[in-house]
Length: 474
Image (cartoon, rainbow, N blue to C red):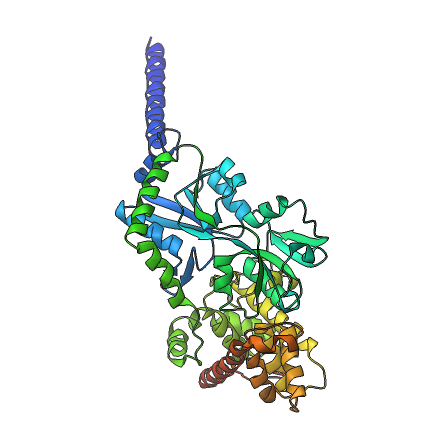
């Protein structure tokens, strides 16, 4: 009898546990599952966070120090503040992953200067328009007079995958280029640089984005407007997103009426680079706060690579201010701010891994140095390699040719400097094999690094570090 009673009690306890587990499961679902909620907006309000997915861009999201630039992010921040929500940004390397996560519910809203297209509208919802743009064909000086797209049929081009540009190309059956590729890895900025250096001849790009990139890369030609002006907007899921869309549409309408959206767009210009001489005040502040965190790694990598430690410290500071997870709106990342293509060429798997970034930066700099003729002596060879690291070897060669034409020594860095700075001038583009470039910034880049290198030598000497270097500073 006792055994039967114990069995019944044990069975009842087990049932009670299952009931508790079931109740806990229902509570968890009510808190976190989108299935329980009638709309995505209900879930967002319950969790208190709006998750915004985007690619890095001055128009959408870019972190600069303690500030976040991008009118899309700032507009959403105003929206979430109004509703007492937190805004969380999730960054993506390509639109394919961004769209997949939106469809799977991992993010609530997608941005990144997304044009409303027919194909996208079949799969997703869009908010009210926040801007307008049109797609241009972008090319370099050699093709500046071509105004018919068929003139580019045999030219070399790259188009970004999963973009409105690729959709447009598919909708142009009459245009069948013979030397065009698509890429999910390269950013538009990297492709534009390839056009500027004449590695390729053309791409498609949003006019609003290209107009900003011209601040950084001179000598771009938007020769053909391929589309009429189209709206850009935030993208939402098709299902259970109507309440979120209604609230966003109402806010966007108010932002236009109050000129808030216009103000947020104008603020972008304030953040465009203003190149100054070496900022030693900030350098010394970082020397106290950030340098101690990466010093041992920088010194170890320099020793393993037989590389000047003071120079490696100076380059990594100039590139990223020693922030291991640094990322620019142009898509370069890490301590040495490598582009995706440079990282691939230098066998760097993870640009944000500080050791890989330092080692890849050294390899890339030495790669540039090997391109420079052996007859050029130090320190000129290493200074030229630094300039090529920043602006590209082809542009350095253009500056050396200009130097020689002017009767100066093309093997002397100090005589090349003024001609490198002239590469910004569109009026001389016809003389340049590789097109205009921001040579002015490259000159300051090299001079800044030399200043920081001297300061690092002083710092290391004071700490009784071994600062002996080989005859080449690389």
